[in-house]
Figure: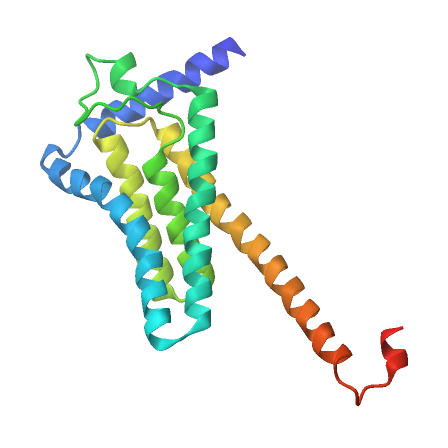
Length: 205
């Protein structure tokens, strides 16, 4: 078990060093991608919800609430795992090998930027399953994940875990919303039917 852990850690840092030290001219783009994460996480549900309010489209409002809910669920899961795992940042463990662009006081596993990006990308893809939504959404999310390694902020395993957690959070929230929405519709349907005097009473017995 210890040998496996050491081998996995060595692979993690080897891959990270290769990514971190490659394409140094691309660093400003990586910074932009990383810094774009939080504004986009907020902007997506706000814009969709705003359009829903302006057009009085309940479906868009529902979509906005779902996407925001996915982000919230992902945040809780990611933050909890960071505290429980408490993995040091790679630049703390390997200060001579990793070039980082900022200092963070939270843990490394999983990558919060990556999980947030994949939660939003998955939520958008589930609600709007069109190639022109899915492709750019996941391209952006994957680029955010790469940028976190390129900037020396996370190991590859942190990013992979973040992608799985983010996508999983959006999917779980989607399934939960589907169940709740179906249950709510069925309940309202039954209430309306019970109030319809033209129906045979025995139907409800």
